[in-house]
Image (cartoon, rainbow, N blue to C red; front, side, top):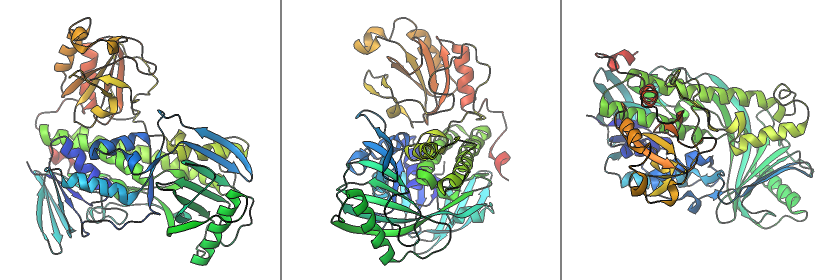
Length: 533
């Protein structure tokens, strides 16, 4: 079968290619550039624990060696610390990392992956769909025709794929602007991120009253100053003056020594593609959505797009097209991003000093600060990973279903599990292999060798039920899971979202949940033609 064609060799496109290869699906990545990304220290990303874990699985590299995992967070207003949060060493925390570093790690892993081909200097100029596949033509030094099973546009804001498919991209332009500087200096805190609203020092030039500081490796920092609405020019002289003023304000004295690494102006747009699927063509990342205000990073959501789409394309590639499963990509991901955009748009008036937050957080500015903190830390409506609660893949009316601390459709917690080979690993380590995960909660099993309990109690019956599921699945065992009673069984999708939790071993309910999670039973004679529109 033909490979999946991925247009765009940025972090989202490379992540999708590696995620497909992990599930034994070949991919061709069309890169319109020369094959490398120019280092830009001021262009960074904040990754939540689930997306950081995704990149670590795909690259085989701990991101802590290349970025900074925050040890804490503080929010200040004028001279007062409004809130301060410290992350325990084993507690999930955001990771701040330069985007060119992410691209480098992914590109190195893709280069070593035989199932991934990167075609440099290949600019897409046409797409033709047929019931059996997709043909793409590229121009440039390596211009040629490419034949693929599916095509995914990961080609950014000005997506050629989106334009060729005539997909509208409505939204708002210049929702926010930030002046950005990456610099190396010594601040009073280490590896902690800071949101400072209405700082007491005198403002100079076209700057609003908010600045964010995020740590980078080797004593570097990214500083973002919110700019007021309008198109006032931020000159190098004004930015340097603001840097010196800010650093002096934080150190209560003269401006400390600093080394300026990079600067820029970051403009936030809010846009959402009308369709994310057109037959065998899909959109992901910035080609499908633009967001980035309040600490919400577009790259973070783009990586979730890739994770969601990869296992569905892999299932279609290996087992034949299943329209309900492929359609669920748009239904799930577009709904989550649309909800985040709505929440962010509601919060912006409060961030700019208006009253737009009062219907969300009544009363004080302290409540507004808490809402902003949630956005930066990946919590609440502004920052938490989306849950696919209204997914078309959600099962209905399961006998024995019970609630756990993870809502149905939300990402699972990374508990320690025993794998089928007897090894102890994190639950997230078993994701992304194209298999459903069936997790039995069995207190006490962690202290015994697997051979002593694998054939005891409910295990034989559960193992037989897992073997009979309509999609490949892996049986895991954990001592505990948040909110799950002993002997309960959790079903987890290949991208780490919870399908259901059942009390005890219930083969019929488990089968029904697994069938729903992969789009239901395949109707004979239904193929991808139904999805071509």
